[in-house]
Length: 340
Image (cartoon, rainbow, N blue to C red; front, side, top):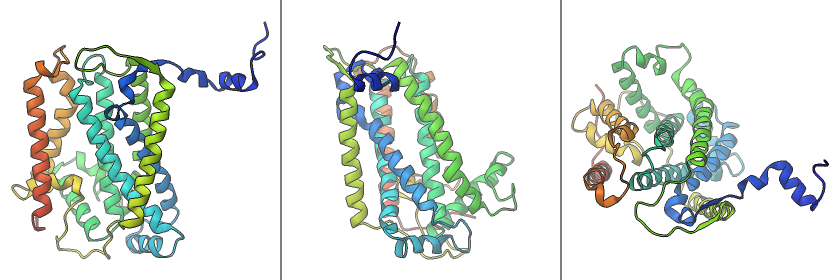
């Protein structure tokens, strides 16, 4: 029996590369925007990683030169300001689309059996995105970055033995350099592992069904790839336009002993709670993270119909509105001192 012969050369190449594996049937609703949010997040992450690789060639993770090296990227490296803008705004797109993706997954009960571990990996990926944002903020080593680090060290001190791993006590190497290593190697590696598992589980368990009855038309998966490509190109175009118009914030070198800045907008809800009680900095993220992580265990009901999940959906909406209100409050509240 002779294999690899017959058919056109292009068909043989497709078979050799396994491209034919993408030809399988999926529900047509997967090509709608709510179900493409995860794909947009993935594409924006790729843009984030590529721009980050470029920026690492010019960044110096040393306290005496960190802020100055970013100024050099802005002013001296050819198109450095543009690449930095793409990196910053791609991060914003990632967090927005990831949160919207999570909301869609909740409303369509995509966390229920047999997709519990798909949900778990998604929540862990969201936490890693938060880690990227925090470490990236510190790496600027301006006043905002310095104060973010002080908040981090304050939390690590109160976590006792657990906090030593990410505190100044673990190593004589300055923590800025260690956070740089976490930002460019540990977080990307963990993200790639979780992304691979997440995508594998989606393939195995397929897309969650719609939370209402109706006839579902099936289409080829290649149509989804085409939609993702369109949205990916649009995302890159939008990020590039914003990067051309709005420069990412960057202050001068930090001044010790003062607290005059606010965190990035996605952390403003915690900032608002800090104004009430400082320990909310530890408690609030822990509660949100554990609630999301344990959701498939807490809500084990079989129904995915929104009308039969009124209590859960109502609580979820109230929490979202509360978080939005806290973010708005953080925007309009004057910066204040929180650390002891």
